[in-house]
Length: 432
Image 1 (cartoon, rainbow, N blue to C red):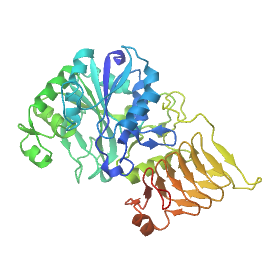
Image 2 (cartoon, one colour):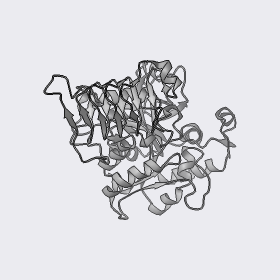
Image 3 (cartoon, rainbow, N blue to C red):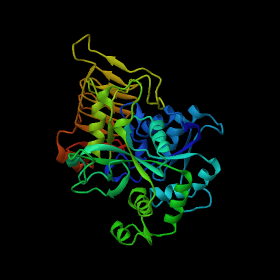
Image 4 (cartoon, rainbow, N blue to C red):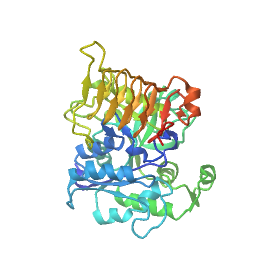
């Protein structure tokens, strides 16, 4: 068990363009999720519950909201000690004065913290996926088999992984022998021709190996063109772990193992929950992942007392439901989840996710929607199959989500799946 000697880096992600406009004013990991949480709460809870208490969060795009969430919700859990900490690192930290040019460059710019801490292991995890994981089990796997690098992978049906995930190719001993960048016809995993191994973007490194590989990668000239980098791997790099660093390690004969996420078992988790992992890279994926949690029996149980998802509770006031003289169906939220501080006032909410401090006024109807908090829905307004970001005041009688042409004309985003997305702090006519 090396949890006390493990240093973790959480990658804050890039611009999150496919989640726009939700990422217009915030980093992807700080997007509200599941009524109560932010996306980053899942990876941080996994590390915290695993006893890993030395964590750096790396972010550069629209990081104010993320920093505020960490300050309010996570810094108090760690205190100000030297042995336990969580801290956010941004570009231009220290002597380096430039943006992160890739996931590997983000860690390279902060290698001095690895030298200072002298950990036995370094975890590098993404901050933008929804899952529960005992990180110690992956770390122990890495240590037991004396790997230079271990990558976590999720078995996925080949047709679902095609053109979507980076795919890991392994031998029968689960040692990495190749990597495919979003292939159209993924290479199957051993003994299962219908499934392949999708990289989860989570890595465990030997510290000396990590430092050596990142120093070598940093010496290469930078290019944003992956095709060019692929043809000149000795001289050019996009400074990405999956595309540049790991293939270079393979060429150099490093021992890289793949950890099967299905082997990860958390106390209190049912067999049906094992292997739950969601990528929320676009608006429709984000919507579906939220909607899963409002079902009667979601695949992932957020109510497991043995492995809670921690966060900053933004409102201490309870949710309130007001009926119209006891009228059935009035003041109700059916098949929905509702966060603190929200008021459901003589209206109907169906199959929706309602975050903090949302007021839905009399005779309004909200269905199949996500309200991300601090929103007012006016009387008789209708919201259907929509995502409304924070700080929006929907006028009386307004209709959102039923007329896509009208929604698009007034500047709302329409996803490929037909969702209407109202941006943060949107002002309707007369509200300027």
